[in-house]
Length: 379
Image (tube, rainbow, N blue to C red; front, side, top):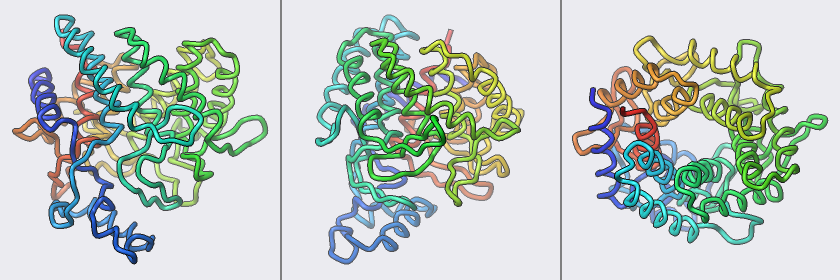
């Protein structure tokens, strides 16, 4: 399977669509949810959001849901173009110009009223324990975007990318809530809740570590260290992490585990703090042995192989490359391309054992895979 050809087809699709697309959670962009009853009824809003996400056929045209630009799509595309600068130096000038244009768009999407650069999704989002309006920030969206900006600055030296990462550290320090256990604490998912979600808190720690790399501000390192201590203290004896400390958050899945491992490794590299090296090694060992088969098929849950999911596959590629496991990165890429890529270059959402949701989602499927495939060594 030619990964380079798949990457070129995917890049062409994303650029043809001008980074616009649908999202698994975009049901509330339907104009019907501007009606008085539907605007405020959480049960109907959450239920419809889940139905539209899970239904095998794409209901979005019937609900008049428009394609739009998600800030995370821009951040992941910035990460991909930075990777392409490294992979194909002859394309450097073109990729840099695209990165600059996307950074300009991201700046326009920073919401007002917060202490630093931050981002959310382009749609209202009803979660189990929170309601977040369009463009209101979460540490997850912000952390994915700032990671792309950090990589872009590392590769290209674009100063604005560095400025935004440093600014985002103020959002983490001043706007996120904290749940303490002695001197350790967990960052909240957003400024509007007190959830204790491990991968979300680790993205906050990664933002601080990346800003520390630029500024050498000890407060950033010390605060990140406290957040990392919280998450590693909740690592299970087999090396895994559950999704969160909520009663309904006890599952273990592929891509959230990958997020934690990436963030922990980045924290360690940028701060020089190796206290949690054993936790990192143990976590990756669990990840490799329990969340993949021999052919590189990424299991969605630790106890359930299906569905094959593009975000899980994409993050798996990124994590395996980070841990210098090129063989597994290539296996995951080839399996996903073979089973999930469409003729137009985009990727299907999810493949279950007996059926497939073939809708392509710009953020969830395509931008993540763009960042992942561009990170595989093509030489």
